[in-house]
Image (cartoon, rainbow, N blue to C red; front, side, top):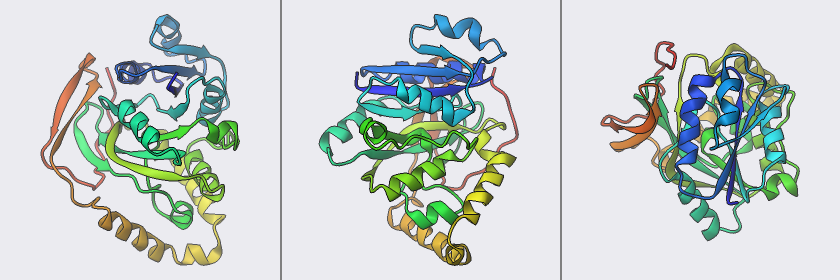
Length: 284
């Protein structure tokens, strides 16, 4: 088993139905564990019968507890988690697998992510940088989106770097800081691997996420908080030097509410790094 992909699920049936095929059609040996927290939106009516996944329906204490539970069950050499409102792009896992084969010293690699609206239309793109401590502590954003994060199983088996299950929305930041402090070797793939759908109800964009961000920032050294504008400027300089502000036209293919059984191709004719927020919408 090459990959174990975990999807935490709670009342996201429509989006989960788009996420699952994007994992299943990767053309590489994998298991897809869906950790559903006893959703009451009809998920339990169809999920256990979907042969493309291993469905685990049990109560958990939140998204990160669900991911931890899935990773503890994992049989794959490489791990990742992808939320219900996220998808993998065609061939993404093969490219990630090849990168790990060619770079045995790397334990975590980050791919780039396309941000789309609820209908699959292009909004922007987020290219990944390897995270640094100060930017993660006080910056306005994480240097990658977790839909594009992949790791070797030894990160959790040997180092025990699981997510903090007491956090609800921004456990990614706390987890990233522990990766940095543990000296885990990280790298960027430099290719698009994933799509993140801004649905209007994303947990990472909500009020609780903002509260957890403020709490994390308060735990940073006082001097780092005061120097936050300089730290942010340094982060933007890194992005500039990495070419993140020079976006080229491209196409991508994802599953959409109006095309749930076949990937729909979109053209990003005017790509941008600027995250433009759409009006709330729903799938289906």
